[in-house]
Image (cartoon, rainbow, N blue to C red; front, side, top):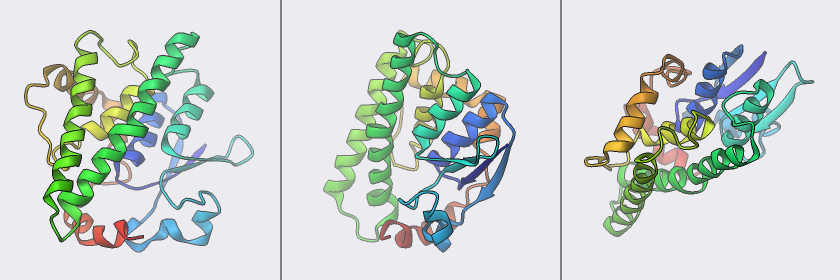
Length: 219
């Protein structure tokens, strides 16, 4: 059994979608980001960085894993699925996972901060991050023009990038003209496991998110 400490964010969905796709048993432990539960000592003992998600593998001596990408790799390796077995295929999947972690996720996060959360609207910052998000989504579109999935077979790389790309409108970025990206997003969005995982731990309350966002981004 896996304990999943999570919230309704793209990084949280990365873990829950992976768990659903792997058909692993897990227990959801919601973390209230608005109340800074992720900053409490008991949570920091699991993840000193104070961020969700975190898993605790009860079947493996209560082994703790934090950082969403590390969680995905750990789960895929444990299950022997969603990560190609051959070295080159595995590398391709991890490369696109790192693309999300080092590029798409951080850039969309900054776009969200300046476009949605900050009361003061700093247009050059908004433009900079929205343009970079669009550029990265265009990179995905170009690769997907010749590949059904990012590493050819469906993998954690697709899950990670989809969990962020699907929120592009929240970042104020449209995907008009990115037909291959749209095809890929729709294909994953139609997967029952992806739908279940993206509903964990519950419906995203955007009004509450906007209300508490200033508190979150300053801590």
